[in-house]
Length: 105
Image (tube, rainbow, N blue to C red; front, side, top):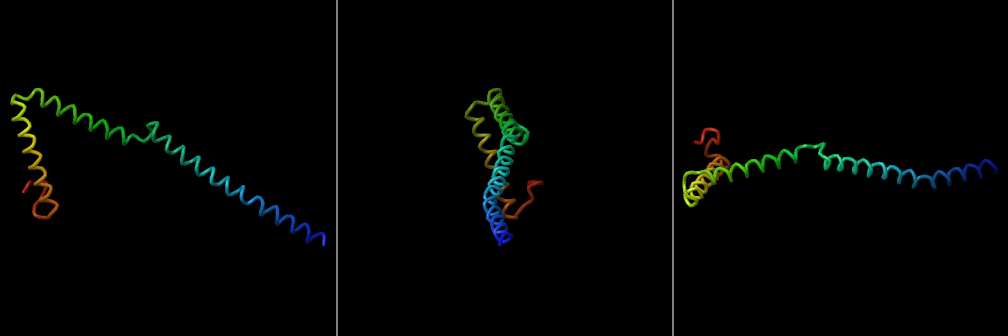
């Protein structure tokens, strides 16, 4: 009877400890996820910085190009709009499978 009581108490204690073990596992996973997000925001993952720097460079380059262009603003906007339309048409043609984007045909 003593062995049975001891076994039952050990089993009960085992089941009482299970939620604590599960909670500890969840705490560890959450801590790892928070650390990973923190590393990304602190700049250890530089992809976002590179994309933003590239976009800023493109914006500055367009601005400087528009300011220093020898044509009037209306002519410059018209030329830019025409080039954008041309590129859009080339992309549509390439996507539809009618041409080759690399050769422009």
